[in-house]
Each structure stands twice: as C-alpha cells, then as structure tokens.
Length: 106
Image (cartoon, rainbow, N blue to C red):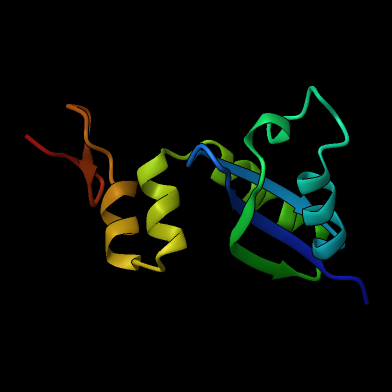
C-alpha cells in the first residue's frame, strides 16, 4: 500500500509552502536542490519540514493539501503547533453574517 504525505515547509524567508507527495524524503531533497527556478521554494532555500500528515487515500491527501493552501498563516501555524483550540477559533466565521447553530448571530 502506498502512502501519501501532505507537508508544510518553512522556507528560509520564514514563509510556508504546502505540498503533497508519495515520497517525502525525495521531495524534500528536490526542494532543497532547487531544480526549477520557477518553483516557489527555489529562492527560499533551504527549506525545513514543519508538518506532515500521512494518508493511504490519495484523494484525501489532495483535499487536505488544497484546504491548507487556502488557509491564513495563523491557521497554518496553529496546525504546525498542534494547537487545536487556536485552530478551531481561527476557523470560526468572523464577519457580520456569522451563523451559530443555524441562527444568525446579532
């Protein structure tokens, strides 16, 4: 059975890169070798893995990768820190159309 890895890298400029692979060690080496000048990590090397989640289902891995890519820096950091309360709070709707238990909050 093949495993799939969703990962977050911390780049040398302190930014984050999120990706998915079926061979984490090789992919990390590729990021740090800088094979493609157009790659996000090329001018941000070296990179370091700060989060990994393992999946046996590629569809679930792809879904999480896409989800994380849409997150704010604060949410990514809460995930990296495994701070579930902070992640939950950051996931709550904060605008004026906020709904709680099916009812609009005043």
